[in-house]
Structures are given as structure tokens and as C-alpha cells.
Length: 372
Ligand SMILES: Nc1ncnc2c1ncn2[C@@H]1O[C@H](COP(=O)(O)OS(=O)(=O)O)[C@@H](OP(=O)(O)O)[C@H]1O
Image 1 (cartoon, rainbow, N blue to C red):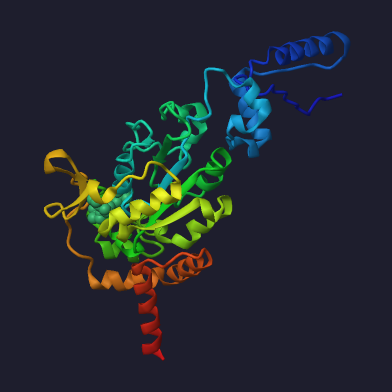
Image 2: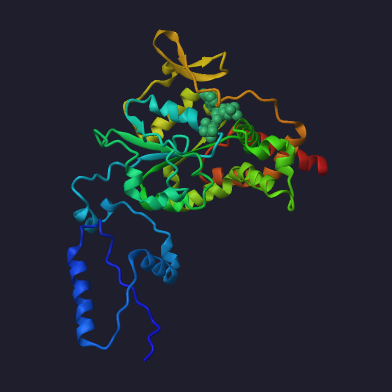
């Protein structure tokens, strides 16, 4: 009989307990079959075997890491050298340009809060859940975090501003960190898009230097690919309600905090009080004493001993001309329905609407009165 079927046996991951009994069993099973049956056994070198395996089971190409300590059987064989506490208790997920760096630095001022070691590759952020770093596994991720000295009071966190709009991140994060608290910051999506465009220009992105902001936001199908790609990255993170909906599919609402980024900019001490309450972190840290408004920078900064201030670098709080009215009007229209959806979502969650959202809703009401 011609053989056409292939079965591939794999023992479970070797790092789970170096299962030598498994290997022993397979080797002896193979030699038993060879000796006592007419079946011909073929195998491939490990890499080719892996390719074959994923050809047969493509759905298993995407792993979903869970915390080994959440399952007793895994915990029992998890190396004694390792700890499951080297994982964040909360995450600042972005989106980009909403004040995430300011929030990150303010959080680090708290005596019980610490973050990951910086990643040299991705502007210090770990960017685990939203990129191929995820395939490097949880040991790779955990290496970014210090071993907490006192697990009950230490609050480890990471901030990766690209988690917010990422399709994969909520499901992956919830599988590994189901109890984590999630913090997101929202500013007017139009301002976010403009700040992001300025950021790309400052980083000498070819398309951002070549095209005006209006060109970018209003590009249509058939426009050059680099322009369309820039447009997507500029506009899509601002579709707040869709992204939030996805996070709320995987995390209960009481684990998700939505901060008004404009308020963080104008009244950071009040926001940081709310953040401390939400996290349940102790001791209470008095941010109204620790932060001061720096008129030269035009932003709130850390107050150092001797009255000096430590502000964020030049790349945060950039100077650039105000957005042109034409672009403003275009974006207000572009985000209109999404802003309405966001207001419904916040209403459902029992959360107040940020002032920028109320203003956008008023514009919609006025426009419909004028039309009527
Ligand atoms: N205290 C303080 N200091 C400096 N900047 C502040 C602060 N609070 C909020 N912001 C606003 O943060 C904007 C940058 O956002 P992010 O840090 O999220 O940007 S990034 O995604 O990490 O690049 C940055 O955007 P731009 O003004 O466009 O540079 C600021 O408006």
C-alpha cells in the first residue's frame, strides 16, 4: 500500500520539566514499530519537521502564552529559579501622542511603582504583545522586568503606546495577564493625528516631509502607497471606540481606566490621584507637591530638590504651527461617528465625557441644527 498520510508526534515543550520519559517512550515506540510491523517510518531534521508541522496545522502558528503559575500542573514543573511575579501588574497601552511618556514618568515618581528595563530596539518600550517579539516567548518578556523585592507592594508596569490600536494585543495580553489593569489615554483624535504627523516629520519620515498634513489625511484610494500607509498609521489609532471595544472584550470594564489626556496635560496631580485610586497603590503619593508647571517648557514637570525642574525632552511638547482650519474641519467629520460611538461607550461604562469629546459632540449638534 502506498503511504500518503503523515503523522507527526511532538512531545510537549521541553522546558516544561525536561520530559525525558516522553522522549524515551517515543524512541522505543518507533523501534518497536520498525521491528514488529511492515510500516516504514520516515522523519525529517527538526527545522524541516517544524515547517511540515505548521503546514499541516497552520492555526498553531500563533501561540497564545499563558501564565505558567495559573495552572497547577505547569507551576509544579516550572523551574524553582523562576518566578511568575516578573510580570506587569498594569499596562499603559497608549495610543501614541496622547501623553503616555508624561504619564510614564509621573508613575515612576511613585515609590512603589517601577517599570521594565528599557529596550534599545524600540525606543525603550518592550512592544511584546503587538509585534513579533511575542514569538520570543514569555521568558524573553520577563527578562525585561526586575524581580520584585516585595510582591505585595511592588507595582511593575510597562508602557507600550502601540498596544492600543493593535488587533492582537488585547487577546494576547489577557491570556498572559488576565488580572492586569489597563490604562489608556485619549485626547481629541484630530490633535493626536496632527501631533503624530509632526512626530513623523521630526523623525524625517520621507512621506511626512513630502506631503502636507492635509494631503495625508485626505489621501484617497489610488494615492501613492507610502502616502496611504502614512495615512493609515496617522488616522486609524484615533478610531477610539473600536479599539476600546476590543480591549473590553478581553478585560472587564473595572480593570480598564480611560484617562482624558488633555486633563493629564493641564491638571496632572488630579489625574495621578485617580490613577493611584484605580491601581490601589500605597502609600499615597502627593503629586501636587512633586510636580510644578514650567513656564518655559509650557508643561508640568517634576520638581527637584532646590527648586529645579526635570521636564520631558524636546520631542515631547514640540513647537509646531497650529493645525489649519481646513484639516480641522476634515478630521472633525472623519471622526464624527467614532466620537459618537465613544460617547455611547463611556456612557455605558458610567464614565464622564472628556471636555474635548463634549465639544466635538456640540459641533455635531450645531451642524445638524444648521442643516435643518
Ligand atoms: N507634562 C508633559 N510634558 C510634555 N508633553 C506632555 C506633557 N503632558 C502631556 N504632554 C503631551 O504628550 C505628547 C506626547 O505624547 P506621548 O508621550 O504619548 O508620545 S509618544 O507616543 O511616546 O511619542 C506631547 O505632544 P506634542 O505636544 O505634539 O509634542 C504633549 O502635548
